[in-house]
Amino acid sequence: MDVFVGSEKKLETMTFGKPYIHITIRSRLLPGWVQEPIRLLPDPNRVAVLYMVFDDCEAKDRFIGKPLLKKEARLIWDFFEKYQERVELLVVNCEAGLSRSPGVAAAIFTAMGEAGKAGLDYTYRKPFQQNVYVKKVLLATHPTNPQEIAFQKRKARLKTKTP
Image: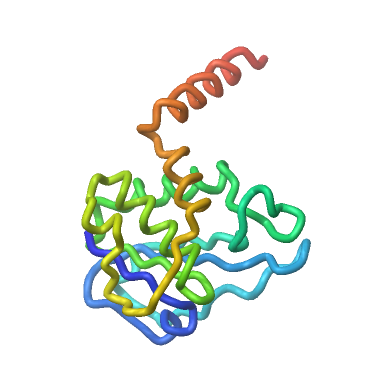
């Protein structure tokens, strides 16, 4: 699978020649207020879009922004795993395409064992700084992570005990 990471502005004007899924990330900016979703061109090759809202910050910065939470990271994994067999391209964007989206893409390709793409040799040639916190949260919640497996088992046991 290939990856394309870019800015919101760039992705609003693009279509792709092969089946793909798109993860788009917006900032919350102010409590209770979220920007409008990205305006994507119609594209018959787009299989699905996942709209996420989290800021470019870490958990320790939660008073100045909304970090990626584990439950949101699990949504990203669920989305990716649902469609990965049907697509040839993963498209990820945030506003600037420089931090959160590279962090998401790096985590996915690290978990897939595609070391070359984990370093993210993007088709989009703009300098970036991966959001290491985003990558770390995503890898911690990957379904094959032993701690995540234990968490899901505990969660399943609690559901069966609830009347």
